Structures are given as structure tokens and as C-alpha cells.
Image (cartoon, rainbow, N blue to C red; front, side, top):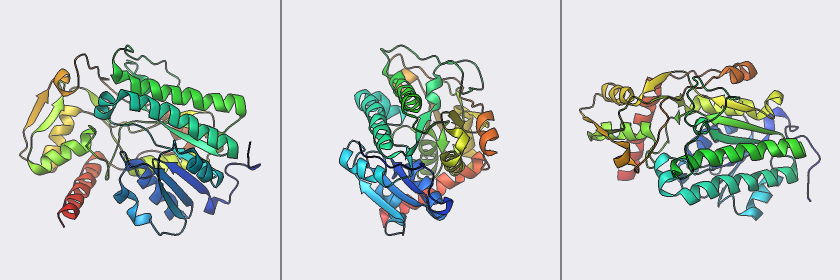
Length: 341
């Protein structure tokens, strides 16, 4: 087995080498900009199934950046990129409720098999690995806020809505198995409703979907009764947390929640978008059975306990929801203008 006998973060702090899977995606592209601006080298891999080439176009040709348009299942490419990396940030995954419901096989295979390949490559070259997980793993748990060591409660296996959560739990178990058995430095990040510019509403992401409807004067569709609540965290705050966890020595072997405490109902979000954008769009309520599938279950609340990341990094979100919504509005307007030109 090929290997590099070095620490995964031994490169001078001003010039670390990062590999980002899902690098052309929403979070990956924001993280790329942050790391490049800090003087690091970034290699990104993405098959563009949900990522967009436009997200990384500003980085093409920039010193220290390289992009590979292929899947992480392309083991030769993944191996080559891992061989040149100090830190792998694994963001590639099947995401979005609608995509998960419509493509359950792809969801499970992409998440579990992809993570396994990334960990195998990291082990060959002694790379530190950060695995992106999700608040979905807390399932239907009723203890609020959700802390990293809490028990989890998922729905039955006959409802594929829970397949995504289960696949990400397997990713976490697999990551920690590599920590225990091989000593690989792994960190798991559980993201809570990351939002911001460059996020697509194509697969059911609620904020860009609401904003786009409001801009076009179309009905804003709220699924269920709208009383379900979420804590939205701006992607620019999230990538600060990721960059910090990537190099903190005490983060290895931990699950870390990354999110905001600012809780808002989905009905409240729809009203807020309408008011902020001065939109005349009506708000309509669609039962879950019509929006997704019969028997669909949702989490009523998602509120993170962020004590762990606050203690590790002194990190807290800085960007308020209204600022994020306006940034999403501006991004959608810009993309619509570019599409017309």
C-alpha cells in the first residue's frame, strides 16, 4: 500500500493542500474561495450532478486551484488527488429532500460507497478527513437542542425518506471505525440547514425556492402546516467553521454540530421572504402527501446545541437571516440576468 509518512496538517499553515469532494457545489464553492483567499492550494472533484460549473468558473486558472470533472467513484483520479492532499473535505453527497425521495438507490449508494472510497484513499496517504453529515441523523428525536452525543430516532425502513439519514449515519460510523482501527484523523460535521447564495432550489431547498417564487410573483408553497421550524445558517459562516475544524488538533474523532440558534417556522420564513422582498406572492399550503409521497414524515424542529464548536473554535454565526435572504435574492437575479444575456 502506498503511503506518505507525514502528518496530514504538517504543511506550513500558509500553504496547506486541500481536496474538496463536491467542490463545485454550493458549500464546496464557498469553501474553495475562503481557502484560496487564505493562500492554500485547493483541488476540487465534482461530477456536476448537483454542482454547477458556474460555481467554480471564477477559480479556473487561479494559481493553486485545479478542478476535475468526474465522480469520486473514479478511483484513479481520486487516488491521484488524495496523494497530493494534506486534508480532504468530503462534501460530495446526494442532497435535497425531493432528490432523496425520487432516487433512493442513488442516495444510499452515493453517500455510503463514496465515503468509503474517500476514507480508503485518505488512509493510503495519511490525509486528515472531514466528513459532511447532517442534522437529519437526529431523526424524530424530541430533545431540543440536539447535542452530538444524543440518541437518535429514525422512522421505519419502509419509508425511504429516512434512507438519507441512515446513509449519513453509516458514513459517520465508518469514519470513526477508521479512527479506531487505523488511527486516521477524521472529523464529522453535522450541518443544520445551510443556506445562502449559489444554493439551488431545484431539489427542494426551501430558501432559494421561496425567494425565487417571491421574485416571480408565483405562489410560495409551504409543505404541511408550516409549523415545522428550522435554524438557518449562512454558508459563509459555515465555511469558516469548516476551515477551523480542518486544522484544529482537538477536533479529531469528534462529531461537531454546525448551525445557528435562530429558529423560525417555515410559515414564518415564507412571510419573512414576502415582506423583505416586497412580494405579492400568495402563500399556499400543500399537504405532505401531495408534495412528496403518502406517509411522508418530517422533523418538527431542528435546533443544534453548538457548545462543542463554540468551545473548540470560539465560533458563532455572524450573518443574520435577512442578510442571507437578500444575498440569495441578489444571486438569483444575477443568474437570471446571465441566462438571458
